[in-house]
Image (cartoon, rainbow, N blue to C red; front, side, top):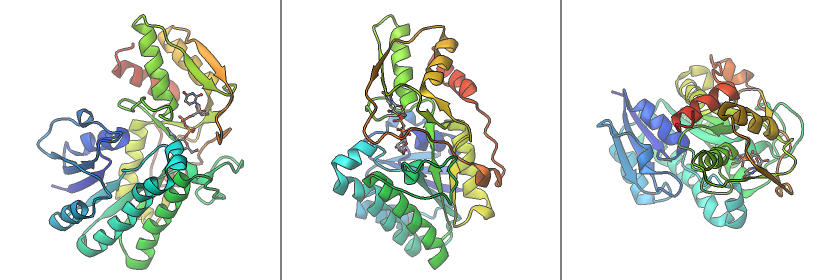
Length: 316
Ligand code: UD2
């Protein structure tokens, strides 16, 4: 049986990946539950949950020295850009330092590792307006979060070039789907929208605050397509030492997005318009040719992904 470590494995993307992989592999999930939830994980004898932080040197040393992993997915991070602006030193420990430590531990103990997949972000492209974003596009990381993601990603790929450690990286665009935590104002906009629709359907009052005029667009990618991408990047020889955009290659603006959900649920969501958020990017869309060259094919339009998400929430 293959052995897999997933850091941040109780979070939205990590838990979906852990639940999927633990059907056939032995999976260790490490998560400090700062955003993730243990309930996200299925009960399965192949899956072991460790409550702890990727910044804990002793714990990381123990996990990496006492196990032999085939694959490691590093998904642990403080995903809030705003948090990184408020607490750059603390978020740097988690979003950058932990990655360097992990790389060193892999170099020391994990000689047979088939792949480390590091999760980077579309944030590395910043507000440079040329679209769609290619992996070789201009990089303009504008926040501590984006700087850390870019630096960590480059270290991860360099450890392949310099020391032969088998690494790859992915740059997520706007991922959505079941189990995304809507609790922070900087949670993914779709998780916040679904929360408001839930309240409306339950007969409560609910309103969605839209920052800007709703014409900003994003490449919304459904979690099942993200899992497909992660598995391809982890397993293909061509992905070694390289980074990959993970999106659908199509963008939708927020007004259109709300229209899609209104129509699926036959409800009109009350929307309050406010000034756009500081640092908000107007439009974002991925060029996914590189990912497609590995065999990736996005299976979910926003309509299809939203339908599946809303069904899983018993809203339709
Ligand atoms: C995404 C990532 C972020 C970073 C960034 C880089 C997510 C959740 N966040 O931020 O980590 O990588 O890309 O560019 O994937 N909005 C509202 N009302 C709300 C919440 C959001 O109008 O209650 C707007 C928000 O101002 C933005 C859009 O919705 O224009 C998408 O917001 P988001 O936080 O889901 O994602 P984004 O692209 O800002």
